[in-house]
Length: 91
Length: 361
Image (cartoon, each protein chain N blue to C red):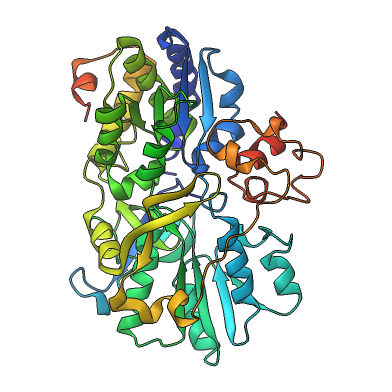
């Protein structure tokens, strides 16, 4: 089961280039804290970044700009405005 | 909660649903292949609110459900061995093998069976039970495999010698291509899985567009995400065109997560794999490479898979192909219920039968 709730990075241990350094982040969601591994995350996070986590491993660091685009396109669609930008966003 | 509340805003879903009703100009069939999509669509009530023109079917997206009966029997046989402890994600615990017994039964008879949250927890079990071989059951798609690869890497780096993985890992594109080759199954659009796509990238669906003209949209898990993806699918189908679009920009990129892909390629290699209902599909599974065979439970325990029978009367296979609905299975709701599941599609919390049964459709 995929967990759709991104969690906020509170602490970071280890370094991105050294697998042996114990690459771990402490994350928080609504006051619940837990450790997550950073071995396979796509972008090494900073404190305050949000992570998508699957079975104890961070798999994606959210980019605030991408999240903003995501919600904006959704709002535009809800308002039935198919902008040039949303159609050029096609991959 | 940041990045959650704004996508759950009720002022968003309602107009999106209205727009979807406007966007559907002709009837079409969409398949989703992600257990979390299946459950979200039922739990949110979306299924009953969709325009009549959209037929939404569930494909082989629940990893426990597509695990073959012979793999389940092999797992049960491993659990009975002395000095073997099984570590697993909880969903597999109650799946019956061909004798009707499950790991839950084995556990109650004294077998070492531990449900874990992360594959890394198996390394803690390895140090807690130094006399036993801890076998982690590698069941899952592209989202799950990188973490298991990283766990094998961590076991190697810290010289853990009593840990191995039984790999039945599967990859998503090959079964989709196999399904599309089936002339009986008419699908016009694919709601592409969310976090599988985080790993493999939206680009992975381009062959479905090129070879089959299938409209493909990657969707997130909130109802608004799913609605947005369905609108994009409806618009593509209305225009009579097919391409890959991404409605889950905050989590999915075109090329995916290359770090995770590299980790998987380091540890695993493609192999032919048996799927429940779909049979053996070429290069649709992942096995541990020779360089890491010390961590391969099949090699460590000298395991040979044997053919096994599906539970009698169970229609999971047809349901996984999107050809039948749970209500068409003679066992559904009678002998096979959430309390006493017979087939894996009822056992797994992500299974199509479980979703239909729970939400009483």
